[in-house]
Image 1 (cartoon, rainbow, N blue to C red):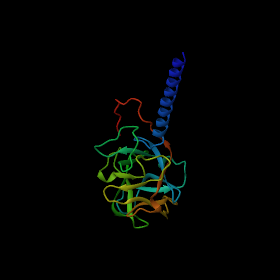
Image 2 (image 1 turned 135 degrees about the vertical axis):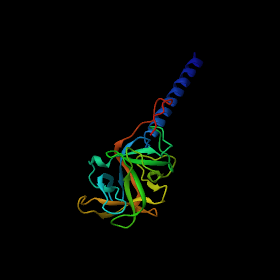
Image 3 (image 1 turned 135 degrees about the horizontal axis):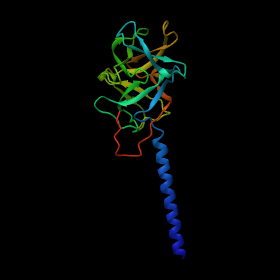
Image 4 (image 1 turned 120 degrees about the vertical axis):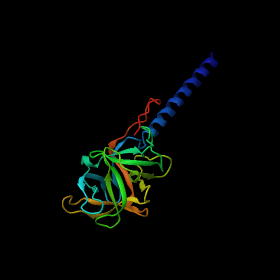
Length: 217
């Protein structure tokens, strides 16, 4: 009887450890930014959120402007994390450090984009929102620069443009009319204190419980 009791005790201990391990793994998965997540991105140096709206630049490319705003409640500051063209990511899959992604503006369906135009205020590289219904071109692709294996929700990261090697940045210049007080967002050639970003408010897509499903973005 003592042997049976010992075996039962070992089995209970093993089941507890397996359950604890599963919960720990699940909690770890849910701490990552995942494919399909809808987030606000916060510049940690200038305390503004990445923002866009259907207002075009009056110079440069003439494309939809991208700015930084202090208002935390503005719905025009939501962006969706997606895979690169012709190589979608699995919905709910954690985004890896170094992974190439697109960042799509929720309200207008245009992608975060940069190219060799000068930004209007600082003369850095212009950043715009480009495309229609989430489809633009190869200059919509950015890589996530972070430590470790996956992009963690509370981690400050950088976004490096795949096509031109600039970093998504804010240095504090403010626009006048018609977007008075909003900050210029641009690309800078070197990593520095102006290009750290962290996820804030948002809807984080959980990893799928059905591995055979292939919802892709």
